[in-house]
Image (cartoon, rainbow, N blue to C red; front, top):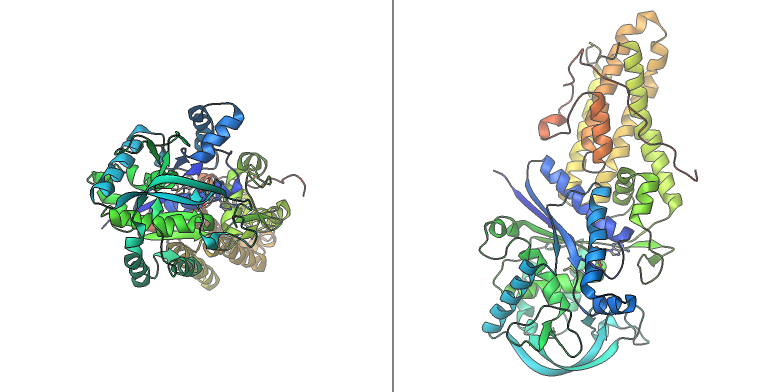
Length: 508
Ligand code: MSP
């Protein structure tokens, strides 16, 4: 039976251009999606932009443009980046889409009609960076936002509130009953930590005197909707909301990817909103850490943003995808430096994978007239194949458990095994000895078979490189598990040399 798999990225704010942190989340989602497609799942991949709220309104004013113009311009940058990074999303949602806005209003009305929204005077500390009122725990000793390091604005307003507190016990129960609801575990613990304190009700409106750039509240047109209430609903509105066929199909299998900055809004606010709306809980929250530069979070506001487009132009999209996946332990922070990138590029890609592909194909083309040699399989080859199978199974398990870094790191391990097999047999020497023709055929056939196998295994991480290697065998990318049998290359089938996969990059 087909299994559905729905993955979402946070929808990104359009007050700043995409940087490597945003690219990471979208790449990770794409790797999971490609993998799940490969194992036969029916997949849906949603990403998009978060376009309302104070932050965007302020940013547009500072730039002397209208919020809508700013949104159109920056949202396009996020959209255009996707194919450049070989990301194949099914949908790109914008919170300014009419269809989304309608659903936000429908949801608000629904919660209001249930008596879960009330109006009261409120004063609190609003952080524009977070786009939310901060609690005591969000402030450092100086009273600054721990994430944005600035003093939040004191705001007093008469506003609408959602009775979030009412769902506190139900949420704690759900998290306790479902150990993989929020992973890695540290973020589950963090969420349970927030929930040790009494949950406050959520302010869900802004008066139009202060902010007009938002979705109008359906039951009081003097107000617009608070940006997180609007934004979180994108995950449902994209599928057409309750009752829609697409929604019913994919929603139960939704996996939300996010970084640790927005754990509270996702793992506390969102589930309570869903409870109020009688929508089933998401399957899972997958929380990753930050990309840091010199131990500081990469972000536009901190002025250390790395442009994914520039980087991609310099090093190639697939190596960038691989690096980002392999160099971060999912859930923890990781440092981004060009030196670390080059180290991985040279070690794992150029010297390990690239060299394996090039020497296997070149020698076979030269000695066997560009054909897969006719040969038997010996003990050493069976050993090699079983090692590859084992590592592939490990990769599959890691990805199924959302352990992306571990999964990526099985790739150099696979290449390493084959390279050691080659070094032990020294086929280039065999090629010079007439009586070793049979051995040479056996070794080169095993090499070609391994290269084909590895080309399939890297597909989710490096789709273009995978296809380039498979092109040398006249093969298409794998579409099912049968690709990962070994010993299936047809003897006598045509092959060709591979163009250089990992050219030297500058600064080496
Ligand atoms: N608009 C909200 C999300 C609403 S979702 C209903 C938002 N937008 S954001 O533009 O600030 O994007 C935050 C997300 O971008 C993070 O959760 C993460 O996925 C990604 N990242 C932004 N900076 C990052 C790093 N430095 N490192 C890793 N990921 C980063 O929050």
